[in-house]
Image 1 (cartoon, helix red, strand yellow):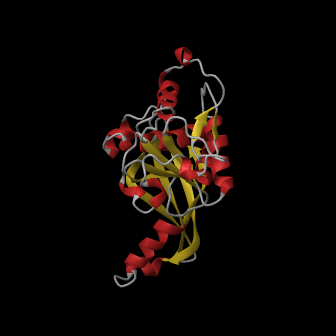
Image 2 (image 1 turned 90 degrees about the vertical axis):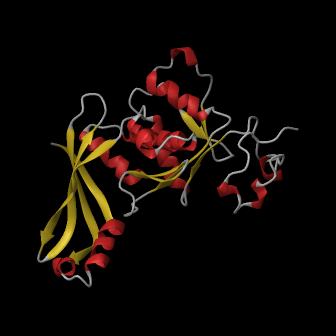
Image 3 (image 1 turned 180 degrees about the vertical axis):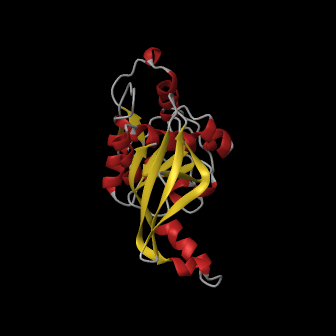
Length: 248
C-alpha cells in the first residue's frame, strides 16, 4: 500500500519490474518477501561466490553478528541482534544492512584479473574478488573485513559520499597502494607477474607485499614497442591474479 522508499534510480531503467514502486517483490509474493523495501543486495554470476563472500564476512575480525542472503538476494542480520552492544564498525555495518532508504550492491567474483581485491564500479556499487580476499588470511589479515570494506564503501557512495571519503572513512579499513604501482617479475624475457606494496590502514598498520601472476605471460618486448605497449598494459590489468600476501 506504500511505495518503495528507494524511488527511481538509473539502474532500474533496464529492469521494467522495478519501475512500479508499488509493485511488491516483483509480483511474486508466494516466493519472496520484502517487509521494509530495503535494497542492499549481493550479486554474483556463480552462487558459490556469494556463499564465499558471506562466509568470509561472517568470519570478519571482531564480528558481533552474522548475515545471511535472503530469498530476495539481500544480506540480512541473522537472529535477534542487541544493537546496544554493537561497537564501532559493527554498529555501522548493522545500520547499513537495515537502512530502508539507501541502495547498495556488492558483486562477488572469483579470480577476476580485472579486480584487485575490490573496487568501486559506480555510485552504490562495488565488486569484491573473494579469491583475492581469501589470500589475506595467510598474512594474518581478515578476509571478511575486506569484504565488509567493499560493502560499506558501496553503501557510503550510495548515500552521496565521494569515493575518496567513502574509502578513507570506512569503518572497515582498506589498503593504500604504495609506490604508485607494481614491480614486474621477469622470466625468460617475459613479464610473469607483479609485486605490489600495500599499507593496511587498520589498527597497527603494517606494510604487505602482494604477489600476482599473469594468466598469460607478456613478452617484455611488447612493453618496449610503442605499437604494442597499450595492449601489453591492458593484458596486465585484466589477467593478473593474486597468488599471495605476505607482511613486509
